[in-house]
Length: 430
Picture 1 (cartoon, rainbow, N blue to C red):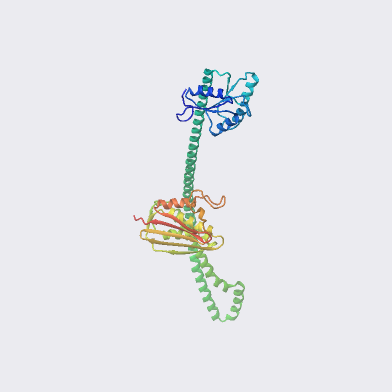
Picture 2 (cartoon, rainbow, N blue to C red):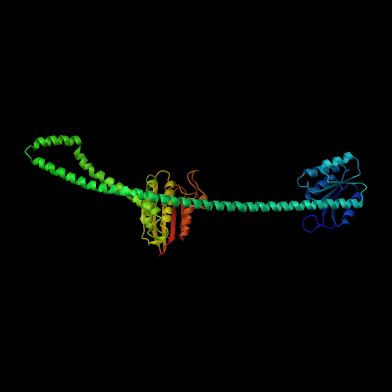
């Protein structure tokens, strides 16, 4: 038999163990005639070394040997994970039942009695080699299947992660669209009362001016009358008690502050409407400086307790863009800048145009971003914030928005000194 039972096209490798030189030679001659490779050794210790150094396809093992008998060798080989799969045929002159049971307990796969019958030796050896060949085939096939399953599982996990990331981003964008609609409705509702409050404050200011003028004229008339001293004394007492002079002085300032507050609310409402506007096409010609001013107006309350904000607006060409989406980017970058500042710092907003490219830089004097995480800062779901305080989607969505405008979102940061995010988008004309 020259059939290959292992890998490649080599003949089976058989280890023959017998302390009798004549038996060893005879067994080698019989098996060589079948085209099988043989490795003869003369004792159990050498058998152990040979089997562990280069595992054979089958072992013919004599039972009665000095130092270490065949039962002990068989038990040790079957206990070793490296050699336990090797079929072992025990060659023995012992024919009693106890000896065979001892061999089976040691792990022997088959027995051949001495004197050895040539045909029986060849048949039993061939059968066990065939069994090992099937075992090896199944083992290799299982390993291949396991590897394919692992690879497929890894591919599915990657696909699932990408799908989940895409789904979450879509949900986030849908959420922002819904918030935009709500903001537009709220802004519209607020705008009406703010409008008549502003109008009423304007009227009150005029009325206050007229009343002040009338009181002054009244004072002059009273002073000119014949009963002026008594009347003036009485009025002066009442005037002091009611603090009329203080009211007349304070009234204009209170009205001015109220009017300013109403105008501030009106401006915030306008910014919200601009940010959340859905009644225009996605792409429109827009002034990026105005977009920045609107974003600053929306996040004013978030910034005023953390930083002094300074703005340097350059002269920019109007560009075709989605102004609501860009507003979302600027709001996100401004809020991140505020969050990077521990107690009190500075935020600087600069805009400029270089040839056909608009650049907006938002800088802070915050904690900066460590070098080891700068490469990951735009990854979806990556965040340095505490659990529940950040989704890790903000910068990823910002980068996506800027990319869809044909631009770039880049950062420069120094730990302990601050960070600058720079948005660059091309000027696009109608």
